[in-house]
Length: 136
Image (cartoon, rainbow, N blue to C red):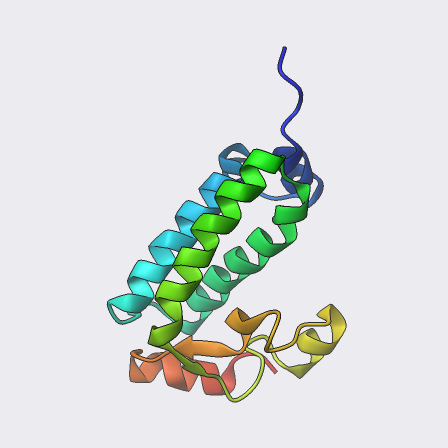
């Protein structure tokens, strides 16, 4: 019997949905890859969808310390490429996407958690309206 996957154990401890636990780090990175593609093509989903997508990126960051050496190497290499690919398609957000309170409570900052402080360059007017009235 193989040893338990530390990534899946961590995700289970975070009460992640079963499909997220089953997918582990590679599943999260696949989800991030899909988001990066959507952003590169012009993000057509809602601001709420975008928050969920950025939460996936945050979960990847929190999961990395709970990986095997091999998972960590493969995950960080893939993540670096994806992050570099998405950055030209992002612009600074006026504040943390989840609002100032969440920023403070979670210790997020624009350098370490840049995904919560940027938004896609190409979005709908509805996205911008929702963002303006969204998290506070």
